Amino acid sequence: MTSSGSVAAVDLGATSGRVIVGHVDAEGVRMDHVARFPNGPVAVHEGDREALHWDVVELYRQVTAGLRDAFAAHPGIVSIGIDSWAVDYGLLRGGRLLGLPYHYRDERHEHGVHPVHERLDAASMYARNGLQHLPFNTVFQFAADPSLALAQRALLVPDLLGYWLTGVEAAERTNASTTGALNATTRGWDPALRAAAGLPSGLLPTLRDPGDRLGPLLPSVAEAVGGQAPVTLVGSHDTASAVVAIPATDPDFAYISSGTWSLVGVELDAPVLTDASREANCTNEGGVDGRVRFLKNVSGLWLLSESVRTWERGGERVDLEALLASAAAVTAPVPVFDVADESFTPPGDMPARIAAWCTDHGLSAPATPAEFVRSILESLAAAYATTLETIVAVTGKDVRQVHIVGGGSQNRLLCQLTADRTGLPVLAGPVEATALGNVLVQARAARLGGLGGASLEALRETVARTVQPVRYSPTAGSSAPRTTPRRRMSV
Image 1: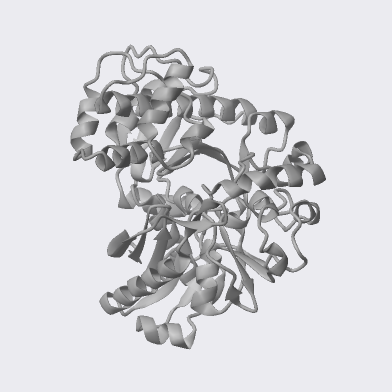
Image 2: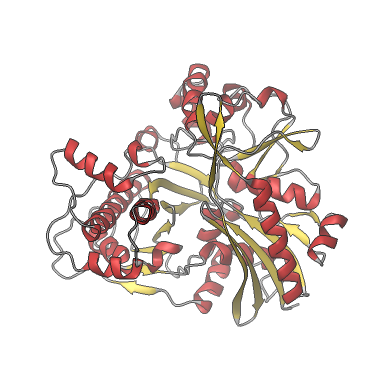
């Protein structure tokens, strides 16, 4: 039976959060943005250092205020879904939060890598969890957390908010796959990985899948938001939701979920746990419907946004559209730098760091904001191309086109440079891929718009009917190398 209805998607990013109501029917999906609010790290003094935390209590206040607006505007909401960034968590004891969650850019996680690898070496870890080594992976954060011994439960950020809304503790599997404690093959918590991180017994909650019903809103929450609907688990890792909403009609695609970070990858049916995959530092993360998101984390538009913040702190007024147009007009060569260098990870003066990197590597640093922006975007596009070349070599997957979704799909210069560097057509959009994927998984669970029981491919067909990606073809005569041998990435 086909029915129409509305669902509320809570979409939380590292710099902002949104509450979006999606209306799903046979024609496709319509989105209504009902609330937007800022998010970001909070620096507080801890002993002899400044520590970065998430103000998750304020985030929860903003989420419930947004849900109140959503129910007021759309009384027929039948489900709520939450997605956010990965790896960060809150610790609970007796149901009470033991302090604000740390931000993944906080430096404390660096002290957790060595103790974990002393218990389980990197090769053995990869054979179990299939994860790209990143020093802020949750297992390393756990190992560096002095509050761990006091905790009875650890909940990743979207699971923590779901607990506050419903009173039900659970770990959604796609986000759990980013912790380093989940076995990539069995898709369950791995005893050896838990032991390596020093996790107390029972700390990790029961695993649940996208589409599962978490539970109804607590009575007090329902009263506060002015409505009642169950919380439905979605791909709560925002990239898992974004990949659902790729409007791909050809299975031979790669994707770049472009925002603060760039997640560059392909979709597989099973993890790749080879030495070549580990040495390439590729990751196997969980996707909706048991798919594997085989990818690498690449730095993203964080480099641009931090540069803009630096210039604005210095008193400049930055018109981003005008700045991007100026960057597109730059004809002189600009340096291509390593966007993965750890010096670019913390917040701060990004242009100064880029200039220092160039000097250290015998390159002339950019001289103007337009040149800095062009250098950033050229460097990101080069990193995308190199990463795709590596992924294709490791997996053997044919890639015929690249889908860019998220905020970066609006950056015309970045999209064109990516097409030129990869030698492949780039299809840009939708911008709101994460929220769309969140909405579609809820709609399928609620059997809205004829989507009950729909395959992942059918959900993507719904996206393709709803949005029209912008196509960028490689520039004729571009001297940029293709990202893989032509036999693998033919157009």
